[in-house]
Length: 178
Length: 245
Image 1 (cartoon, rainbow over the protein chains, first blue to last red):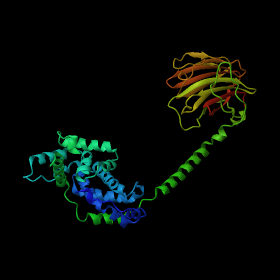
Image 2: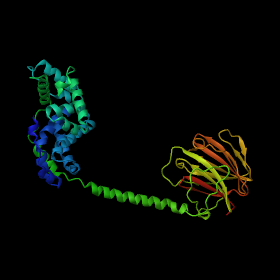
Image 3: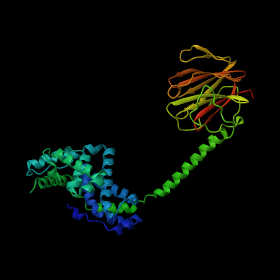
Image 4: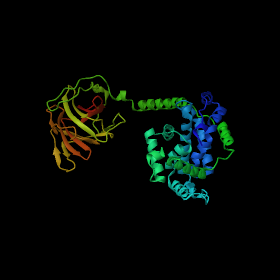
């Protein structure tokens, strides 16, 4: 996944969506559905629940579109933060949320030992710890956008990414992470 | 390949493993859900409704309490007494005729709806007027939340609290003033026994200042009749000792 795939949405589509055009809104968030799903899937550890979270997040985003502050470049962090909130709510309200993680399939036998260790360490992280890692490493968001999605300062976002990465591999240095 | 690239690549494999790919139908599912979802009502509309409700509530509270009926704005200015030294200029006193004179027990309810945990009495002031003698109880930080009880009695013997020791004041009758949620020691440093020498209000003596309850014994010459009300600016309770109605 690369940042280039998530290009800026044209401001015209945003304006039409804000004026109530559902079709324009759907086109606006269409490129964001895949990263939103991946974020939700990693946070929840359940693919069906992740799709539900993306759908619910999309509806909430549509209903609250007039509350969006900033230009078209703000849509992606805003939408991802809504989906992340949906994931938090799903975990709070559904009893199975803590039981789903072991259902993720086991890695192939030929995968390296270090990979297996990394995966186990990842599954031990809480969803809140996984979130900055997904945003920064998986979705390739720049730190300032990670910060906007998390609702924190850039320095705090950098700290959260590094802290979560250190929990995966204790010998990581700041230079190796960023 | 740098350690960063190694770490990132392995991490992305883990993420891929966990998430997989979204269902191809997710896009249509979301599009359909958005098309069917109603747009949220404007926040301005909600704010307007809320403002109307709040206005109606405030008008209702004012109508029920009607503070303008309970406190007048014209009347004689208080005369400072030798035993007190008010620190702020009080607002004009109400007309003596604004409140009924009664000779039975009554409770003066506070007008404000915001009260301190403990109201600090900051001054006790007594003054003589033509038709009545006045006791003013100043509060430093707002008036008590509960009503102040005034209990007239025959004779001038009061039970001191919490000791129960009897206390006798000057005069022929008495009025016990019970102020709950208040104290007479945080902001007050004046006398706790004011002997006025006035024709109606002869003496004001503290008989309790314990665990948030203040009791004052008023020694009165003649019938123990009074009118009592709150005033603001500064917050104060006014008790006029006057002839029977």
